[in-house]
Length: 278
Length: 281
Image 1 (cartoon, rainbow over the protein chains, first blue to last red):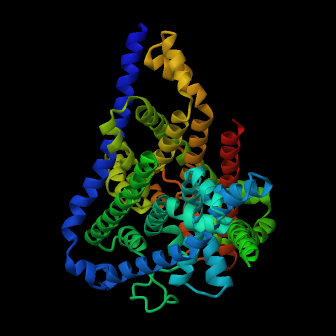
Image 2: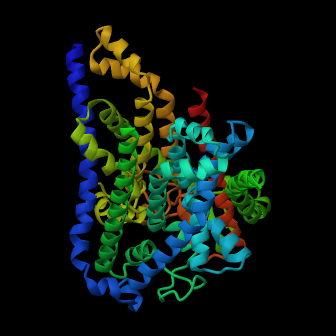
Image 3: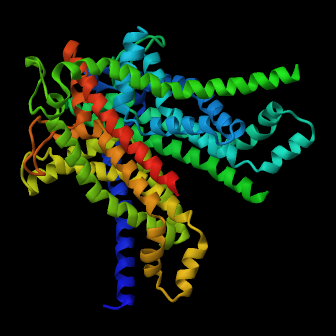
């Protein structure tokens, strides 16, 4: 076998692997959407689950998901962006930077079930918040921190240094430069990170089921227990309560994640286009 | 006034950064405080190498779960890593622009889809398939490996691809100029040069596979016995916590936190290893 045969075989193999992955993804999506989409109608979205989710809709789980997610992101964003600015603008690659980065990357690798254990013992038990929207949100806010830090830091570092130099030459202070020059330029990249974090919150199950609980009632405040869509889907499927409603909820989740990715990508593309133009 | 505000803003950023990383310390402390007493009671050796998990009789041995975690992870690596590296090579070297623009968002979507959706798909498609065509209960190491292989793909692909794209162009140009074919260039120059990034990608993929919970619970069968074949059901460290946390209390709950400690240590070792490898170059 000569090198040309090698070339041909290797190329064929690589193409096969790539197309295979695309095919698997398409298959999973079609398999679930084909059975889930027909279930999605106005009533499914607006009615409270009845009879443990056997009938009725998923409205309370949509509200629960929105509450937990928005609260988690609201809590995590200041910390994430602040840490990113500190890493990118204030430290010079010293000892502290290394420690912060090590911690951030370690947080990124911790499994969600460990976040769940921590959230349960710290927020639910130790701080006495109980199974609640706020416990779930606080747990998720820790979980999404590394994503926020990494994407924001990358966005801040991508801002050309000349921007800062011009700002300083106009006798702007560091704070003014950060707020008025660097932050607006990095905003699309930061927004991309925030949107991806929203996606992670919506998709999370293990950490939420241990901290926000699995109550089907409509949450009345941030201290009520709730069940997010992902948890609801898990319980419907695992306990065999209603396959039809499980498919419907899964389809809803997939559509949401798809939309979130599309929005995130438009931010990235705008960011990249802007960078190229200048 | 101006300098005051300058100093203040610097301190605020530092404070935000320090509180972010204190999260890691909090997690470590709270999980260890909850779980360590039980490990001390049972004994480290008996806890880790104990063969029986029977909380109602006060027996806490997690060896079957460690074997379970290792076997599903190994399976996921065997199935997922070669495919993932091929995809990364494809994206970096072969893909026509149009296909690449379809592929990247697809991988992103793959990463974003909730793990429970994969578990569900495994439960209604992979598990019956294994039961009907290969035998056994279907809920098995193999089913979990297949699902995990799919789930680690985005990690393996994106990190490998980034490390291939980060190589200086001269490597490739030099190799091609020496008369190497495209494949020889990839195999003898690009892959060895990108080795550290690819190894880090594999390690992080392993971390994801060991840490995944909900998708695995749905397809792995959760039997606390040592498996004899890949068609046997097992229980992993994560699923042990995920299944029993809902109703555990007292000593039993401590034992689940102790399981969490073992998991936490494994993950921290893998993380540090990946960080060390990527930083070394």
